Image 1: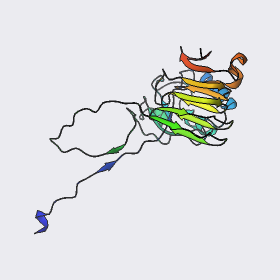
Image 2: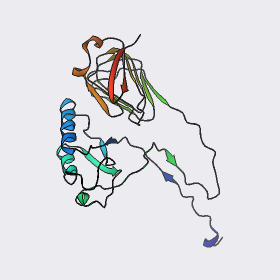
Image 3: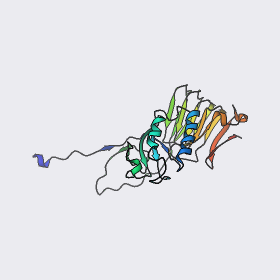
Image 4: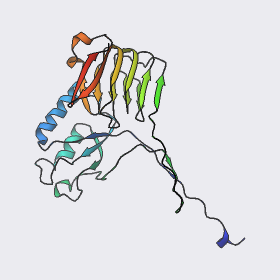
Length: 235
């Protein structure tokens, strides 16, 4: 068989998803940075080692302080990997690095380029769950951006649980619980014994000092309402 008649190798593309935090600065950048510093002071490790996307949709090309915003992120050890909602051609962004302009982020698995005439029926959506039966020890981090995390044990102080959906802890929750990282603002955090160091849902946070002491070590849950985390007893 001549080379011209050999079948071409099928081209395949693989996708790989990573959890990236999205920060959306307010037009009053000085005030927004002050709020960011306050959050970092309460939870210094929250942004450590995590890629961050800056969403600039609330800003304009002439927003005061925009040119210095990238350096301000670097000074706070926040690693900006891309922007979205802005225009890289803005003069204020001329000295920024990593100006990848991302849109439409979503979870990605292995991808195959379809044949030109092939049409596949839409796949039903489902929310997977990760079930952990062993205790989550101090220093451990459990990440599952695809759905819910269910822990049939306890979470130690210094541990971190990060879920795309809800978090259920059927034991003591002493570490950090971060739910709704995939943009699910209706996510909740449930704990049989609420002792969390930090609660977060869809980018909004509450530290241990902000949780009403009457819920300490009680069966409770947290949810997001009007951009505020609410903690209530489980009935």
